[in-house]
Image (cartoon, rainbow, N blue to C red; front, top):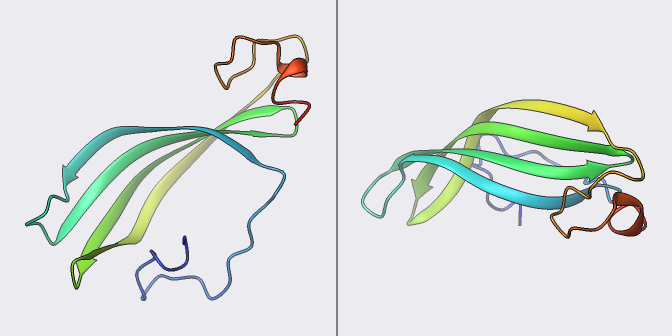
Length: 106
């Protein structure tokens, strides 16, 4: 799905996904244009994931273009943050459980 929705000019030839990453949330912070009658748009999003013992965020301003009524990811400017979690800290997935009893064990 990711490869098919990338614009042909920026589409990676092969995409290797890391199976150890657990995605836990996606927040759309801002949308500029990108409506039905638009040919282009921008989306600012914040994706949160867990990698090993770290809570990580990917914050990106992405550009999209529409070709033949389908939207394609063109490019983006990502920033990453990483914070190490302790086993006893609150799980960042929002379950209310301790990290060691929730996302750490999966």
